[in-house]
Length: 116
Image: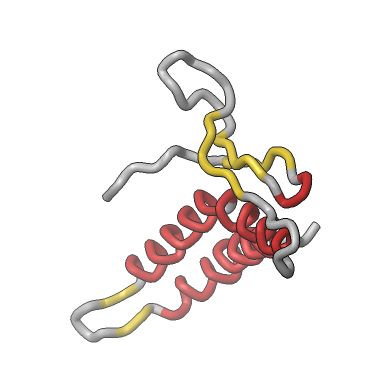
């Protein structure tokens, strides 16, 4: 599996759809602070360029959160899968889903969609 810069990633800027996406924390050998991940740019005179750029920035900055919750959801279902009978143990998976994963998925989707 490839290794990516760990999260959290944050958004800096936002003027005219121009965003810097940066990792928060010590991610370089010098022990510096934020680490640049990506940039998005608005488009002057091109339809909904700034709106699209804002949405792209939110999606990119949410990548570590999305990855973490998808990995956790897969782990819950994997540990409840009985390969011999191709059946999921519904009780445990259901409880873990309701108590944990659904809440995290809802939160990360709100972040991606720009909900406050």
